[in-house]
Image (cartoon, rainbow over all chains, first blue to last red; front, side, top):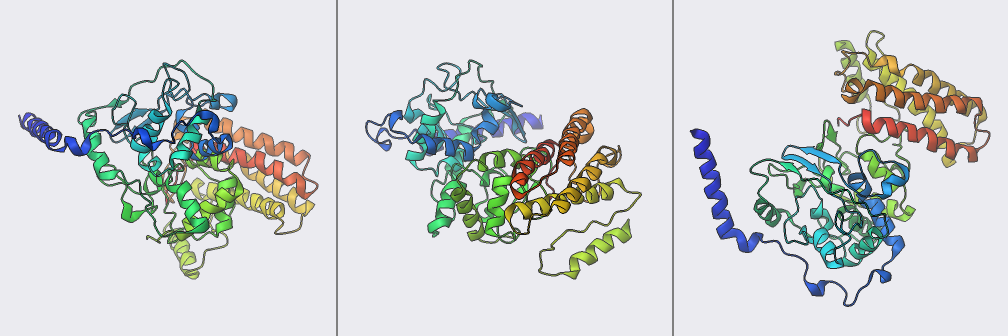
Length: 301
Length: 154
């Protein structure tokens, strides 16, 4: 009885939110004019696209589970992410026209990355880290798009997420998005190397998705930026990487991102191994820029 | 056990505000968790000697390279026995539950590390240039095992 009453209250609240908040929470694809006029993939910077793919760790989530070697170029999806809200399954983002994203336009892709909106106009769950990607430059998104289109197509259909009520109501994501979409820099006022690092770390690198703790509804707590917290995807904790806890030098940080070795020659573990697989492929100046950004973060105990 | 905790605490207090150059784990012969921590640190120390030579922070030293490999293989050969049932928790262990739920995978991962070390012991690095590929191989083994069988706690 009490449960029914509770459900009724939730339903009424949801209806109220939908009625009042539709204007605030409707999916907003990128405007037509946001892309450079007449842009074609041939204009893209292929090396930049490959670099962004590495730093973004797209492969870590979207390759088939346990894929190794050449199979890691096939982004057919299927990896499972168990969270407190349910299990998310990474979709096929290979260039296959039906199973993957081969039928998308550049604007569809940019809307997915920068706005968290699908080509059909639905909100994506933030398991796909669009809150970070929304901080990317349009040109970088297009370079990444062009690079993804050069990878092998795969016909494996994407599997649906396994999400229960009320998290399966996608309208709720619109409310969440109104609260948590912050395309502007989180750490402002940086310049030079640290600012270049900010662009990489706060955007495609999506470091904060794990290294910043989340509030009760799963949004990043911006006032505890990069201060660590519980692992969102398994046992253990994610470390604080602000200068309050991370005493390594800039070159120590850059070396860790290259080799996975800490200054004590302990080695990287857990999901950070996949991150280092990507950062080890970056040009050295990108690792140095990320290190400069971490050193410039406000220290948070 | 309590004495050990007190000792670690005292060590932490001894150097306020200083990042310790080496973390010290006091091994307790009756406690596999402290033994495996000590053993892992031994491998870390060997890798550190390699790393310092590879980066040019210290001169290449062939006997040091050989000794480091010997220390690493001696430690690594004993790893599998240091994770018995009942040692899942304690001393802030960063051993992942997967070690006990996927024992075969864990031991296969260890075996690869020992096999690579065995090859290296038989043909140890003779100059600085030989360190980079070796560190890549051995570091790859560290990462592969730590990816699945280790968790962060702090």
